[in-house]
View 1: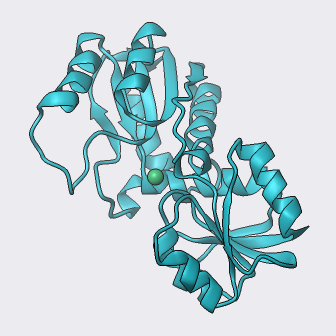
View 2: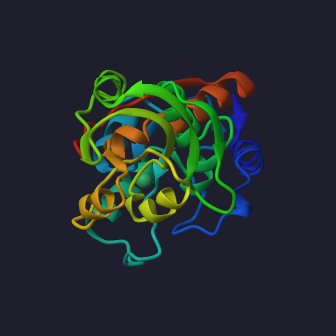
Length: 246
Ligand SMILES: [Zn+2]
């Protein structure tokens, strides 16, 4: 059991929240009960996740994608009102960690994904959200590995032959960083989503590009964070998968 302020401060420090300029607030987004015993985690704070957290009698929800974003309306109406109402009525704290959770060196989405895909020599790229590392696998085996580990059929573009040795990756919707990956001279760039122009950029630069799912690539950081918090504060934790094919 832990006090909400202690948990909030601990996460702020552990995830170096103040280091990041982000698109929404990191940390406690909606305040609930003062003491926390049971936590649930999920990728995104959608209504399905909040409703399941109510059923599970959670004291706090931890997510990667919270409910407040700079580019969205600031008013609390419709679905947003319903979500906030459910949280407050059931005294559930909502904690959200976006970029600090992608990038963290121990429980981040990128390092957790890299571990599952057998990437070695993993390191973050300086002044960037990209990570890079090494593999020794051919593309068709890597495709099967992704399907097995992420439960997602990846979309593959660009160079579809050969052995993968150098890889760069960034979880979520980071297809816009493909040029940065090309500049790293890697064989493969992997992220969660693809845009209309990405296949041509990959082909023209003879790089392999894989879109392995935004949700699928960002399931693991929040679980690792909550497992870490459990060992630190003796909490109970449950991950709730709200299926999302994107
Ligand atoms: Zn994301």
